[in-house]
Length: 259
Image (cartoon, rainbow, N blue to C red; front, side, top):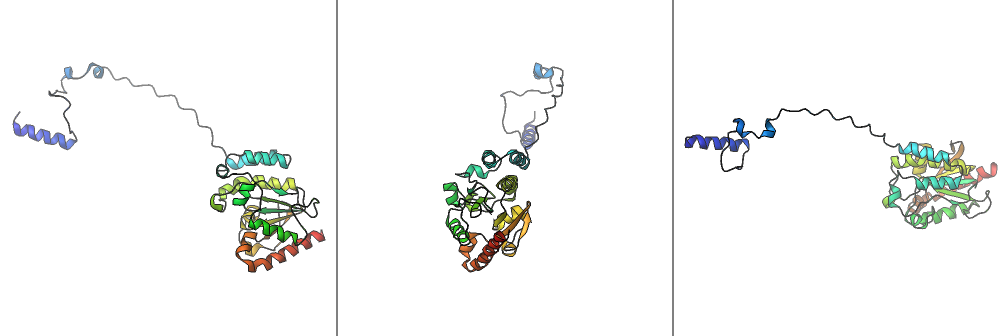
């Protein structure tokens, strides 16, 4: 082979991507003897593999929550079912499962947003600064979570039983998973009045936000009278709004006295 031809061939091979020599001697790949016997065997086409069985449908977290909540015959069973629920990722980052506090069967049921740091540590709702203000607010109209009689007692829970990281607002998907448990919670506790503390419970129960607009306006949800109110944490940041909160408390007291 002429040297210039060899040089041109090498240049072409390099251009095609060949970058190393496999053997010391050249091989004529078109010669039958150069083709390994295994390669010269007739080509056999493998039979198509059997179709894999269809994957099981993904679990529906909301449907599972609905089934678990509906199966709970009383509040202890509901607490156990909700604590065992595995689809909410908040559970894996929280220290405590926070179900409720106060007297089950109280005339007034208060629903907040979610546990904060103090609630996560203690395992009870509304025990931090906002919870202490909540206790003082309701004490001013003769109600307390520690009362033994339903007429003077409070029953307190949250939309979410686990603390969101950094006390962020619960996401819509997280709330949707907990809504069946909350609805069943209200049905089993059977309060005369439900108080929604802040935007998150208003969104969960009423499907509405804008608590400064909603507060103080009686409505109905899940077959019970509902009163949206400003969250105590908001009142700690906006003390001037305590006058509106006091007006709402008086409206609640009047409703209870009138029933």
